[in-house]
Length: 225
Image (tube, rainbow, N blue to C red; front, side):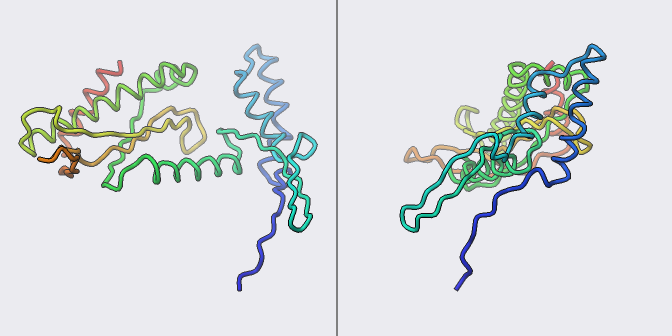
């Protein structure tokens, strides 16, 4: 038999990260304002919500079991996407499960990483609409490359016969937690082609060569700019 699982309330205030943010966040916020360079509102909201995350004084849900009569208080979470380990981990787990079970087909995938010049990173960091447009443009070029590659290698009469797809995630920081907008894309490592019965059949393509990737990077750069 396995031991019964018990719920342990998360004590974010006892972590090193929480203590650091609680201690230094007011200094950073006030220092930026004193220099006439206040932080964006979304940055302030992220920090302040994190400090309230998991705190019963900030609100909670009461869970009651009608079977045993047990009551449990579950504090509200910040649901942030910045640096809250609990909410970020839960969001990543839920997102990965949704992608694997509902979105991505069980076929080979290839990862593409799109890095940007520093000038564009700062521009996209504060313009969500433009950031989405750049990501869409890059994915369109990658899918165009896949369809052309399929037409040549599979002997298709038109690229319209080759169907492909991708999903892209925006990464906002680098390994040093510096502002570094870049994109991670999972692209089908092949195409779907309709068979004689009108059913989509997946055809895996050969890996792109270095010349292929250099040509693709040049097209993406031209289209993005």
